[in-house]
Image (cartoon, rainbow, N blue to C red; front, side, top):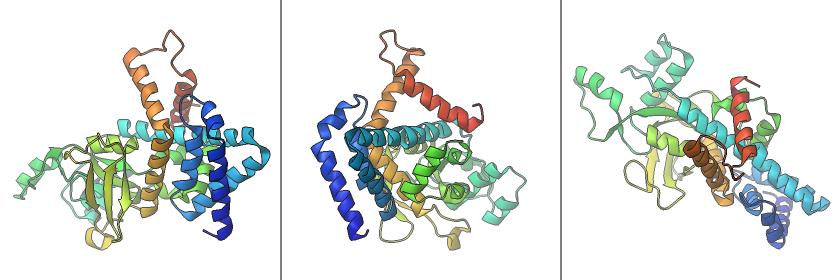
Length: 319
Protein backbone atom coordinates (compact mmCIF):
# COMPACT_ATOMS: atom_id res chain seq x y z
CA UNK A 1 0.00 0.00 0.00
CA UNK A 2 1.09 3.58 -0.58
CA UNK A 3 1.78 5.92 2.30
CA UNK A 4 -1.38 7.85 1.42
CA UNK A 5 -3.50 4.70 1.57
CA UNK A 6 -2.02 3.69 4.90
CA UNK A 7 -2.85 7.15 6.26
CA UNK A 8 -6.46 6.79 5.08
CA UNK A 9 -6.75 3.44 6.85
CA UNK A 10 -5.35 4.90 10.08
CA UNK A 11 -7.80 7.80 9.95
CA UNK A 12 -10.70 5.44 9.33
CA UNK A 13 -9.72 3.18 12.22
CA UNK A 14 -9.42 6.21 14.50
CA UNK A 15 -12.92 7.32 13.48
CA UNK A 16 -14.32 3.83 14.16
CA UNK A 17 -12.66 3.78 17.60
CA UNK A 18 -14.06 7.20 18.46
CA UNK A 19 -17.62 6.32 17.36
CA UNK A 20 -17.76 2.67 18.38
CA UNK A 21 -20.76 3.06 20.69
CA UNK A 22 -22.84 5.00 18.14
CA UNK A 23 -22.09 2.44 15.45
CA UNK A 24 -22.97 -0.49 17.70
CA UNK A 25 -26.19 1.19 18.76
CA UNK A 26 -27.28 1.23 15.11
CA UNK A 27 -27.96 -2.53 15.10
CA UNK A 28 -28.59 -5.13 17.78
CA UNK A 29 -28.11 -7.98 15.27
CA UNK A 30 -24.43 -7.54 14.46
CA UNK A 31 -21.61 -5.08 15.12
CA UNK A 32 -21.40 -2.39 12.44
CA UNK A 33 -18.16 -1.02 13.87
CA UNK A 34 -16.57 -4.42 13.28
CA UNK A 35 -18.02 -4.61 9.78
CA UNK A 36 -16.06 -1.46 8.98
CA UNK A 37 -12.96 -2.59 10.83
CA UNK A 38 -13.07 -6.00 9.13
CA UNK A 39 -13.46 -4.60 5.63
CA UNK A 40 -10.39 -2.45 6.28
CA UNK A 41 -8.13 -4.85 8.14
CA UNK A 42 -9.18 -8.23 6.70
CA UNK A 43 -9.15 -7.30 3.01
CA UNK A 44 -7.43 -10.06 0.99
CA UNK A 45 -4.98 -7.68 -0.67
CA UNK A 46 -3.71 -4.09 -0.71
CA UNK A 47 -6.14 -3.07 -3.45
CA UNK A 48 -9.09 -4.26 -1.37
CA UNK A 49 -7.84 -2.33 1.62
CA UNK A 50 -7.50 0.81 -0.51
CA UNK A 51 -11.04 0.36 -1.82
CA UNK A 52 -12.50 0.05 1.69
CA UNK A 53 -10.47 2.99 2.98
CA UNK A 54 -11.50 5.30 0.13
CA UNK A 55 -15.19 4.46 0.42
CA UNK A 56 -15.19 4.83 4.19
CA UNK A 57 -13.08 8.01 4.18
CA UNK A 58 -15.50 9.66 1.74
CA UNK A 59 -18.38 8.72 4.05
CA UNK A 60 -16.55 10.10 7.11
CA UNK A 61 -16.29 13.49 5.41
CA UNK A 62 -20.10 13.51 5.12
CA UNK A 63 -20.69 12.52 8.74
CA UNK A 64 -21.64 9.58 10.95
CA UNK A 65 -24.99 8.85 9.21
CA UNK A 66 -23.13 8.26 5.94
CA UNK A 67 -20.66 5.97 7.71
CA UNK A 68 -23.54 3.91 9.10
CA UNK A 69 -25.02 3.70 5.61
CA UNK A 70 -21.73 2.37 4.20
CA UNK A 71 -21.49 -0.26 6.92
CA UNK A 72 -25.05 -1.44 6.33
CA UNK A 73 -24.52 -1.47 2.55
CA UNK A 74 -21.56 -3.82 2.99
CA UNK A 75 -23.72 -6.11 5.11
CA UNK A 76 -26.68 -6.04 2.73
CA UNK A 77 -24.70 -5.87 -0.49
CA UNK A 78 -21.92 -8.38 0.25
CA UNK A 79 -21.98 -10.33 3.50
CA UNK A 80 -25.59 -11.52 3.58
CA UNK A 81 -25.74 -12.44 -0.14
CA UNK A 82 -22.44 -14.32 0.13
CA UNK A 83 -23.75 -16.36 3.05
CA UNK A 84 -27.07 -17.08 1.37
CA UNK A 85 -25.58 -18.16 -1.94
CA UNK A 86 -22.76 -20.20 -0.43
CA UNK A 87 -25.00 -22.10 1.98
CA UNK A 88 -27.61 -22.83 -0.63
CA UNK A 89 -25.00 -24.07 -3.11
CA UNK A 90 -23.69 -26.53 -0.50
CA UNK A 91 -27.12 -28.01 0.21
CA UNK A 92 -28.11 -28.35 -3.45
CA UNK A 93 -24.97 -30.01 -4.83
CA UNK A 94 -25.35 -33.68 -5.85
CA UNK A 95 -22.63 -36.24 -5.26
CA UNK A 96 -19.48 -36.18 -7.36
CA UNK A 97 -19.31 -38.77 -10.18
CA UNK A 98 -16.27 -40.98 -9.82
CA UNK A 99 -14.27 -42.75 -12.56
CA UNK A 100 -10.79 -44.17 -12.54
CA UNK A 101 -9.42 -42.31 -15.54
CA UNK A 102 -6.71 -39.81 -16.32
CA UNK A 103 -7.65 -36.14 -16.28
CA UNK A 104 -7.75 -36.16 -20.09
CA UNK A 105 -10.16 -39.10 -20.06
CA UNK A 106 -12.45 -37.28 -17.67
CA UNK A 107 -12.45 -34.19 -19.87
CA UNK A 108 -13.50 -36.27 -22.88
CA UNK A 109 -16.17 -38.24 -21.02
CA UNK A 110 -19.76 -37.90 -22.22
CA UNK A 111 -20.97 -36.01 -19.16
CA UNK A 112 -22.38 -32.60 -18.43
CA UNK A 113 -19.84 -29.85 -17.79
CA UNK A 114 -20.71 -29.91 -14.09
CA UNK A 115 -20.10 -33.66 -13.88
CA UNK A 116 -16.78 -33.27 -15.62
CA UNK A 117 -15.76 -30.51 -13.25
CA UNK A 118 -16.57 -32.56 -10.17
CA UNK A 119 -14.73 -35.59 -11.52
CA UNK A 120 -11.69 -33.48 -12.38
CA UNK A 121 -11.53 -32.02 -8.88
CA UNK A 122 -11.88 -35.47 -7.31
CA UNK A 123 -9.12 -36.80 -9.57
CA UNK A 124 -6.85 -33.86 -8.70
CA UNK A 125 -7.24 -34.56 -4.97
CA UNK A 126 -6.78 -38.31 -5.61
CA UNK A 127 -10.32 -39.01 -4.40
CA UNK A 128 -9.58 -37.70 -0.93
CA UNK A 129 -10.96 -34.84 1.11
CA UNK A 130 -8.30 -32.15 0.79
CA UNK A 131 -8.98 -31.03 4.36
CA UNK A 132 -9.45 -34.18 6.44
CA UNK A 133 -7.67 -36.75 4.28
CA UNK A 134 -10.71 -39.05 4.22
CA UNK A 135 -11.13 -41.30 1.17
CA UNK A 136 -14.18 -41.09 -1.09
CA UNK A 137 -16.60 -43.83 -0.06
CA UNK A 138 -17.82 -44.17 -3.66
CA UNK A 139 -14.34 -45.23 -4.77
CA UNK A 140 -13.98 -48.24 -2.50
CA UNK A 141 -15.74 -50.74 -4.79
CA UNK A 142 -14.22 -49.43 -8.07
CA UNK A 143 -10.74 -49.58 -6.53
CA UNK A 144 -11.33 -53.15 -5.40
CA UNK A 145 -12.41 -54.22 -8.88
CA UNK A 146 -9.22 -52.72 -10.29
CA UNK A 147 -7.13 -54.51 -7.64
CA UNK A 148 -6.05 -51.16 -6.23
CA UNK A 149 -5.31 -50.71 -2.56
CA UNK A 150 -7.83 -48.52 -0.78
CA UNK A 151 -5.97 -46.00 1.43
CA UNK A 152 -6.17 -46.63 5.15
CA UNK A 153 -8.35 -43.63 5.93
CA UNK A 154 -11.96 -42.92 6.94
CA UNK A 155 -14.39 -43.37 4.06
CA UNK A 156 -16.80 -40.48 3.59
CA UNK A 157 -19.01 -39.01 0.87
CA UNK A 158 -17.39 -36.19 -1.12
CA UNK A 159 -18.38 -33.02 -2.94
CA UNK A 160 -16.60 -30.46 -5.07
CA UNK A 161 -16.90 -27.46 -2.76
CA UNK A 162 -16.97 -24.04 -4.39
CA UNK A 163 -14.46 -21.65 -2.89
CA UNK A 164 -16.77 -18.80 -3.86
CA UNK A 165 -20.29 -19.70 -5.02
CA UNK A 166 -20.61 -19.88 -8.79
CA UNK A 167 -24.05 -18.31 -8.40
CA UNK A 168 -22.40 -14.88 -8.30
CA UNK A 169 -22.21 -15.16 -12.06
CA UNK A 170 -25.96 -15.68 -12.37
CA UNK A 171 -27.25 -13.18 -9.85
CA UNK A 172 -28.62 -9.95 -11.28
CA UNK A 173 -27.22 -7.91 -8.42
CA UNK A 174 -24.81 -5.25 -9.62
CA UNK A 175 -24.03 -4.07 -6.08
CA UNK A 176 -22.90 -7.53 -5.04
CA UNK A 177 -20.72 -8.01 -8.09
CA UNK A 178 -19.18 -4.54 -7.79
CA UNK A 179 -18.33 -4.84 -4.10
CA UNK A 180 -16.96 -8.35 -4.46
CA UNK A 181 -14.70 -7.43 -7.37
CA UNK A 182 -13.53 -4.14 -5.83
CA UNK A 183 -12.75 -5.61 -2.39
CA UNK A 184 -11.26 -8.96 -3.41
CA UNK A 185 -9.94 -8.30 -6.91
CA UNK A 186 -11.69 -11.50 -8.03
CA UNK A 187 -12.82 -11.68 -11.64
CA UNK A 188 -16.39 -12.99 -11.57
CA UNK A 189 -15.75 -14.85 -14.82
CA UNK A 190 -13.01 -16.91 -13.11
CA UNK A 191 -15.45 -18.68 -10.82
CA UNK A 192 -16.19 -21.47 -13.31
CA UNK A 193 -13.71 -24.34 -13.38
CA UNK A 194 -11.50 -26.43 -11.07
CA UNK A 195 -9.62 -23.33 -9.84
CA UNK A 196 -12.75 -22.47 -7.83
CA UNK A 197 -13.30 -25.96 -6.37
CA UNK A 198 -11.83 -28.13 -3.62
CA UNK A 199 -12.71 -31.79 -3.03
CA UNK A 200 -14.14 -32.11 0.48
CA UNK A 201 -16.21 -34.48 2.56
CA UNK A 202 -19.82 -33.36 2.97
CA UNK A 203 -19.06 -32.34 6.57
CA UNK A 204 -16.10 -30.16 5.61
CA UNK A 205 -18.05 -28.79 2.63
CA UNK A 206 -20.90 -27.66 4.87
CA UNK A 207 -18.51 -25.94 7.29
CA UNK A 208 -16.57 -24.29 4.47
CA UNK A 209 -19.76 -22.98 2.85
CA UNK A 210 -20.77 -21.49 6.18
CA UNK A 211 -17.35 -19.81 6.49
CA UNK A 212 -16.64 -21.71 9.72
CA UNK A 213 -13.05 -22.39 8.70
CA UNK A 214 -10.52 -20.86 6.34
CA UNK A 215 -7.28 -21.69 4.56
CA UNK A 216 -4.13 -19.68 5.27
CA UNK A 217 -1.36 -19.83 2.66
CA UNK A 218 2.09 -21.08 3.65
CA UNK A 219 5.32 -19.98 2.01
CA UNK A 220 5.43 -22.99 -0.32
CA UNK A 221 2.99 -22.79 -3.28
CA UNK A 222 0.01 -25.09 -2.96
CA UNK A 223 0.36 -25.56 0.80
CA UNK A 224 -2.10 -24.16 3.35
CA UNK A 225 -3.18 -24.46 6.94
CA UNK A 226 -6.90 -25.05 7.43
CA UNK A 227 -8.19 -23.95 10.81
CA UNK A 228 -11.54 -23.54 12.46
CA UNK A 229 -12.47 -20.01 13.52
CA UNK A 230 -14.27 -21.20 16.64
CA UNK A 231 -12.01 -23.15 19.05
CA UNK A 232 -14.77 -25.64 19.92
CA UNK A 233 -15.32 -26.78 16.33
CA UNK A 234 -13.47 -29.69 14.75
CA UNK A 235 -12.94 -31.19 11.31
CA UNK A 236 -14.13 -34.72 10.65
CA UNK A 237 -10.64 -35.97 11.58
CA UNK A 238 -11.07 -34.51 15.07
CA UNK A 239 -8.62 -31.65 14.60
CA UNK A 240 -9.16 -27.90 14.86
CA UNK A 241 -6.32 -27.22 12.42
CA UNK A 242 -4.71 -29.33 9.71
CA UNK A 243 -2.20 -29.05 6.88
CA UNK A 244 -3.48 -29.01 3.30
CA UNK A 245 -1.55 -29.59 0.06
CA UNK A 246 -2.74 -29.30 -3.54
CA UNK A 247 -0.95 -30.99 -6.42
CA UNK A 248 0.44 -28.71 -9.09
CA UNK A 249 -1.00 -28.94 -12.60
CA UNK A 250 2.17 -30.68 -13.78
CA UNK A 251 1.44 -33.54 -11.38
CA UNK A 252 -2.32 -33.90 -11.85
CA UNK A 253 -3.11 -32.35 -15.21
CA UNK A 254 -5.73 -30.18 -13.49
CA UNK A 255 -5.43 -26.56 -12.38
CA UNK A 256 -5.04 -26.31 -8.57
CA UNK A 257 -7.30 -24.03 -6.52
CA UNK A 258 -6.70 -20.34 -7.20
CA UNK A 259 -4.78 -18.73 -4.29
CA UNK A 260 -6.65 -15.44 -4.86
CA UNK A 261 -10.02 -17.18 -4.47
CA UNK A 262 -8.82 -18.94 -1.32
CA UNK A 263 -7.63 -15.60 0.07
CA UNK A 264 -11.00 -14.01 -0.77
CA UNK A 265 -12.87 -16.78 1.06
CA UNK A 266 -10.58 -16.39 4.08
CA UNK A 267 -11.10 -12.63 4.14
CA UNK A 268 -14.88 -13.03 4.04
CA UNK A 269 -14.73 -15.63 6.80
CA UNK A 270 -12.72 -13.29 9.05
CA UNK A 271 -15.11 -10.37 8.53
CA UNK A 272 -18.20 -12.53 9.09
CA UNK A 273 -16.75 -13.90 12.32
CA UNK A 274 -15.54 -10.50 13.53
CA UNK A 275 -18.82 -8.64 13.09
CA UNK A 276 -21.22 -11.40 14.13
CA UNK A 277 -23.22 -11.52 10.89
CA UNK A 278 -22.65 -15.27 10.47
CA UNK A 279 -23.72 -15.93 14.05
CA UNK A 280 -26.85 -13.84 13.59
CA UNK A 281 -27.79 -15.65 10.36
CA UNK A 282 -27.32 -18.97 12.18
CA UNK A 283 -29.90 -17.80 14.71
CA UNK A 284 -32.36 -16.77 11.98
CA UNK A 285 -31.96 -20.15 10.28
CA UNK A 286 -32.48 -22.04 13.55
CA UNK A 287 -35.71 -20.18 14.16
CA UNK A 288 -36.94 -21.00 10.68
CA UNK A 289 -35.96 -24.68 10.95
CA UNK A 290 -37.34 -25.19 14.45
CA UNK A 291 -40.63 -23.36 14.03
CA UNK A 292 -41.25 -23.47 10.33
CA UNK A 293 -42.94 -20.08 10.66
CA UNK A 294 -42.40 -16.58 11.97
CA UNK A 295 -42.39 -16.13 15.74
CA UNK A 296 -45.58 -14.79 17.21
CA UNK A 297 -43.75 -12.26 19.36
CA UNK A 298 -42.25 -10.58 16.31
CA UNK A 299 -38.76 -11.73 17.22
CA UNK A 300 -38.02 -13.32 13.85
CA UNK A 301 -36.23 -10.96 11.51
CA UNK A 302 -38.56 -11.04 8.52
CA UNK A 303 -36.39 -8.66 6.52
CA UNK A 304 -33.38 -10.97 6.69
CA UNK A 305 -35.37 -14.02 5.63
CA UNK A 306 -36.92 -12.14 2.73
CA UNK A 307 -33.59 -10.71 1.61
CA UNK A 308 -31.78 -14.04 1.70
CA UNK A 309 -34.69 -15.61 -0.16
CA UNK A 310 -34.57 -12.94 -2.84
CA UNK A 311 -30.85 -13.49 -3.37
CA UNK A 312 -31.38 -17.20 -3.96
CA UNK A 313 -34.47 -16.57 -6.12
CA UNK A 314 -32.49 -14.16 -8.28
CA UNK A 315 -29.90 -16.86 -8.79
CA UNK A 316 -32.62 -19.21 -10.03
CA UNK A 317 -34.15 -16.59 -12.30
CA UNK A 318 -37.40 -16.50 -10.35
CA UNK A 319 -37.43 -12.72 -9.81
